Length: 133
Figure 1: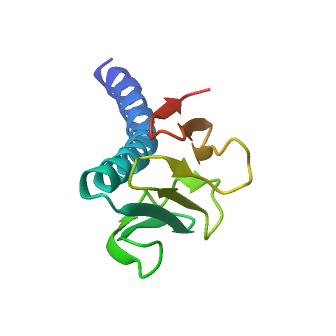
Figure 2 (figure 1 turned 135 degrees about the vertical axis):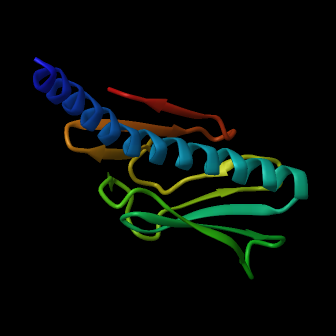
């Protein structure tokens, strides 16, 4: 009887752990988008997030829209797949308004792990919604 309870508990734990990596990745991206906007407005600079590959992106600032200074590179869980294309960029101006890649419109980031999905929907004014369809 104890073995049955342990196997059920382990299966539940494994499923929860699997979802946790996806949720942590979605939260990280959403927070970095909001952080980039806050940084742009606080420092009266431009801030951009550039998606560099399937599981990474960089955050950089500039005072004139050129000569970007990279602040950091962030990675999401390696077993999470994303919808962004390398080179997709979100740029916040010094007033906190964003420009997005032209496709898809509106810009939505989809993160998937197994059968679970999160949608990250950033807005022009920096608000970010996370939706679990």
